[in-house]
Length: 135
Image 1 (cartoon, rainbow, N blue to C red):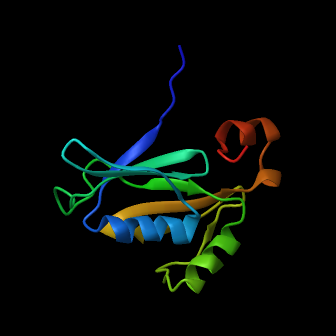
Image 2 (tube, rainbow, N blue to C red):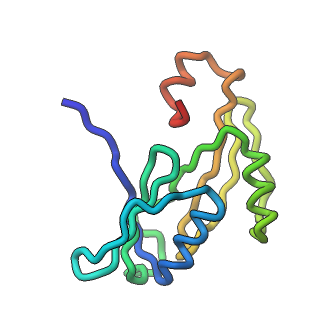
Image 3 (cartoon, helix red, strand yellow):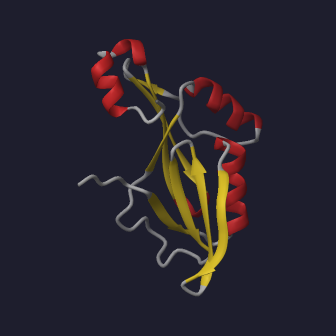
């Protein structure tokens, strides 16, 4: 038997703002937009991963059990440049650990994102294949 994480499900106080953010910053595509469980639900895809949004504000103002969502890119500097070009401001610069580069950013509704790049030539190929989602 195989299992795979399919999606994260997030509340959105302004669903259109959230959708615009993920589309503009990460090229997200809308997979469906329909009413389910009494609220508008929109599922987006970023690469091979999905996020589903409820058109409802978060139940509390904290992050609950979610610390962050990780979004992998193959060129972190380019993505950060793109986001800055769209007016996004970063609180910190990119952290570079040699084999892993990342920056933490806050999306709408205080969703914390780790936007990262696994530096392929800095780790063994078999390990890279195990951890990357970009294959």
